Image (spheres, rainbow, N blue to C red):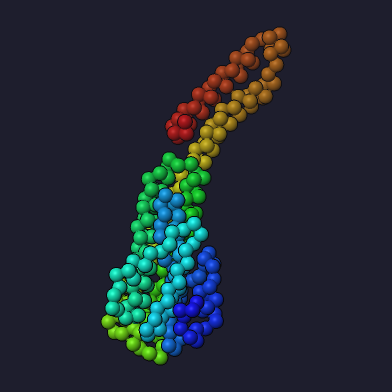
Length: 280
């Protein structure tokens, strides 16, 4: 941390030194002569059906920018595409480019989530129920995390746009840079709205899946009811007459004929009713 400006708060040093995986919430604050920000860039990994998050911390003064990139375990490092082409620009412009690049990563997450939900909707009737439930749960977890991250980042950008940072020097974020942050704020606002829409679509898919499960259970209940009813009436008739084939053969066949006729008639009537109700 030798590149840090003098007088940086020990709490900020601890955040910068924390290992990757210790999830931070995006935030930004001014400390007189410098600004400290915690950002979270997000990248979808479609082949693994997950969204990877990477913490990016920065400390900015009027003449210096320090960026700490924390690559997650087994993850890909975040490339500073916004800084590779930066030449002869102020620190405030560099801060804007880093934050704007992070905001653009959220739009990629939105596109990825929309594609995942479309795939889920296309296969919700063909996939096993367990797989559908797990996929819905994973997408819901990713959406909640992404929505909270976008909201917190938007709040941080709003502090720059509204000039509510505790800064002694206003030259860090000149007027033209603040106007560019307004565009980043709109990007974050749009990303948040689209994530809300994606969450509603996911809820609709979950409700549809649950209704399909309930419908399947009703069909099973109907079939069991038909089977039980077809067995119950003949059992009642036989029990009512006390059917005993040894005694009946000794005394006559009329009780056997009556009971057999009742069984056949009742079974036929039940089949007609069940067919009319479309239970079979």
